[in-house]
Length: 321
Ligand SMILES: [Zn+2]
Image 1 (cartoon, rainbow, N blue to C red):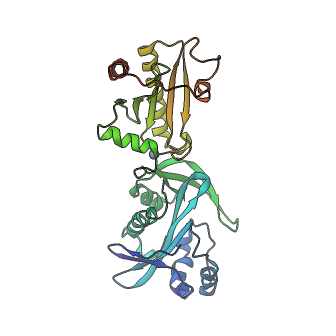
Image 2: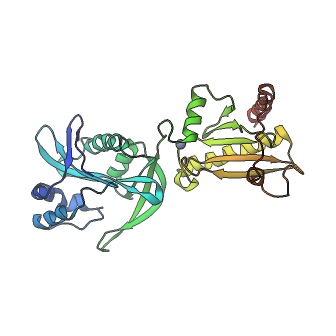
Image 3: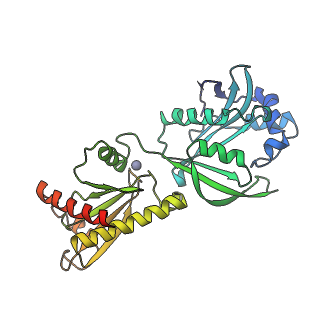
């Protein structure tokens, strides 16, 4: 998509075929190209052909020119492309070698993310860079992204394959966009009567419906859909928090068995654990808890006193573990 905006030092505008000579200064620079997916350009005419071939109206791709306000020179390009299978926007950029080290990439991408958010939902920012490319690693860290896993990528012409690192930032969603982000906002503002305790990676809340007495949820602090989208350290801590919550539910409510489900579908793909204390005969037929919902049962909202007693019992067990 065509984007026009300014930052403190930069003017952002769409690239045009007339930018070929200026863009050749980085597209044709072997040092800039070291870890790039596209091959090194040897002629400005080839850069022009590439510029002419681009679809500048693709709503899933923001790939703009970066102009230094002070000099009026085009010094780089980059942007973000939507990856529907990951519900994430992947960033990419090139800056002319003599303009490295001024923080222009971070300045641009920070503003671009805010810009795109005016038109599109931005749930996550992804970045993949060649493992030895420490400059890119610093860019991602400055953008608040964290390591998720090792990966690899090959140049478009297949001439080279790089060991790579996959970084990500999961972003909280604006009000009304994600049920779980809304609930967390309520907790932080002390407006959620079901809130029990904050753990390192999530919030423990009682379920609104207490047909299964002690039904508890653990809301992930990150707006992420899947466990594999979390950094290894956060994921390990989240799973440990989950086990701790489950043990507290067991100790507080003494069920015969716990049922677990990690959900996050529909409008809010924000993962949250459901923990159901199960007891003999608590469903119409032996089996999963969901049959009670399928059968259209009436919700069991506890009284305030009952709810507070359940919360107290659970918090006491969480504090002990
Ligand atoms: Zn969310």
